[in-house]
Length: 96
View 1 (cartoon, rainbow, N blue to C red):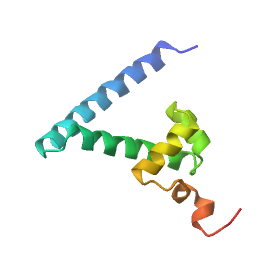
View 2: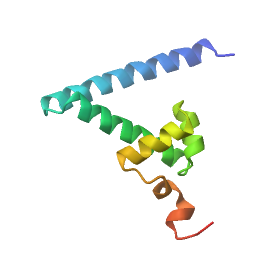
View 3: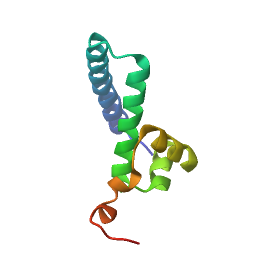
């Protein structure tokens, strides 16, 4: 069960995030970034963060993002992301 304290914390975090996001969006608009460019960069950074969190594992990353693994694989390819770059054991030259 979620306590009222936890709910209040979540609401405060969302408020801070919304303020930060609003400021960032304002800066990007001022710089002339298009919606398409912003969407692509946001999606790329969001996916990279999930891959880092799950050490390059597409299945775990897809689950945390709420999308199918094949959808993530397509997005990774379209965005030029190399999932293996986020797997520490693969970067060190180790092979499976």
